Length: 251
Image 1: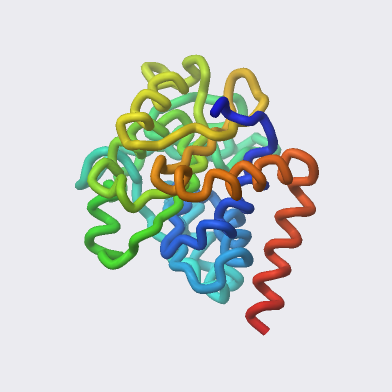
Image 2: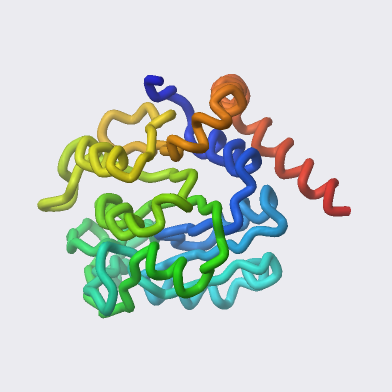
């Protein structure tokens, strides 16, 4: 099927509700806000928020709501290798005003109003992490927002491709970070991992894509398509309703 164009985050919420994965990995979490939404939809899942920026990570550890919602916070760079890696933290300049906390990346990019600070952080592959930490999980979903490095995150899940059923990933259709892999590269890699693109955002340069495993799509194609159609009409309402339904069911 051709990817449906819509607000992908609401469709991802509906697909999470439908899939009910054992584990959700929020890669490039920034502040844990997406992980908090995932918890409303998945009361029993393991949710792990990866954040490479040590300042953001510290703020997340101090967030009592994250602790209350049982979200695990990990200060690691998720990529295609294990060990340590350089990470360029964007921090506001001394005279800067409003600053986006989510623009740090593996690639240095100097921005107006900010300064780049290079830090070394632990680097992990998704397949190795799952094998170590969640060896019994059979159904995994990913939310990936890593500022130009989506390709390397997906490279690192090759050994767990049979377990990853659902992916929401931010991609760029043209180069923003020097030497980065763009959407076409990410989609070619996704095909080798048996992932199908079923939805995308409308932005022409930087947008989100939803990928699902071929096996899950073949088993649930009618419910998946129905979820996309419904979210195309009234995505925010669907997301709220599904979160409410899980809350009521848990009472």
